[in-house]
Amino acid sequence: MKLLKLVPENTNIQFLKWRVPFYVVSLLLIAASWGLVMTKGLNYGVDFAGGQEITGTFQEEAEAPIGELRDTVGTLGLGDPVIQRFGEANQVSIRVRLPESAEGDPAAANRISGQIIDTVTAEHPDFRVDSNNTVSGKVSGEFRETALYALLFAMLAIAAYIWIRFEWQFGVGALFALFHDVSLTLGMFALFQLEFSLQIIAAILAIIGYSLNDTIVVYDRIRENLKKYRKMQLPELLDLSVNETLARTVMTSLTLLIALLPLLFFGPASLFGMVAAIVLGVFVGTYSSVYMAAPILVWLGVTSDSFVPEETVAEQQEKKARGEI
Image (cartoon, rainbow, N blue to C red; front, top):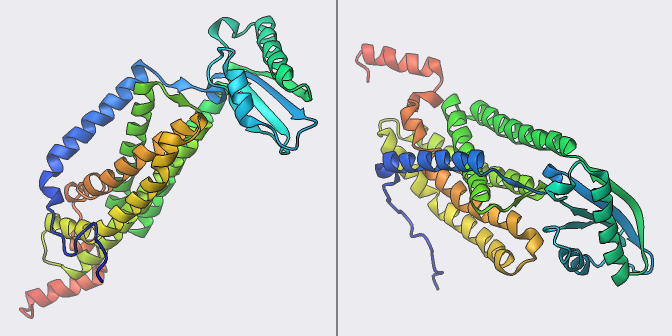
């Protein structure tokens, strides 16, 4: 019995026929995304904007009630609190973003932390405060810059790796595809003002890894076909390579979405931003591998001679001169 195939064998979709319109649309989306980031800005969470952090221990409970704490602190009107286990299972970290009126005002910050502690201890009398600290905006700003540098260095290192493994044109193509994916993700967070925290940095790194994996699969097939079909026109060869990897691309993306979509719609609110970023990354990462990373090779002048040793090319030229070819 034959199994159902989502992608038929021997597909012949002419992806590169529309490479110019898709590139124009992608460039416009990148410009719009950065325009939103520059004008509306990102809604930084406690990690990047500063705030109040309280750590404590539940002395009579084996495990900290994270869900209950999130609901309890959430009723105080201080935005979405970041509540995580801290150390042992019964230890917890509670972080909230301070209102603008309380920034730089130690007395106001102490009042807010006191309000949080009173609310938590009213529900859980065994809660013991271990530390109560204010994270300044300056420290968070430095944290923000460090995270940005980490993303940039990761993208540059990946481009250098692909350059070494393939050719410099492939490194440029991969870097542009990654820049496209990260830009659209940041644009989504600026447009909908979703909270931008360390979780989102982790999601962007996951997007970079997924997009890179998809791009390398396509590039590997392009390199093999460049050696195999020396006289084939490059756009036709790129279409062939993308079609040959299409079934793998669709199945990988689909299985990942099957795992992510239930989390997106039914998962906890604390994970919504991270899951939404990865879901978008699956779509834009798949798209960029086909319409960003592959077509740019045409404009960068990749040829079948790129993967043939120079002496072999010279020998073939001599044979042509002698009329042997």
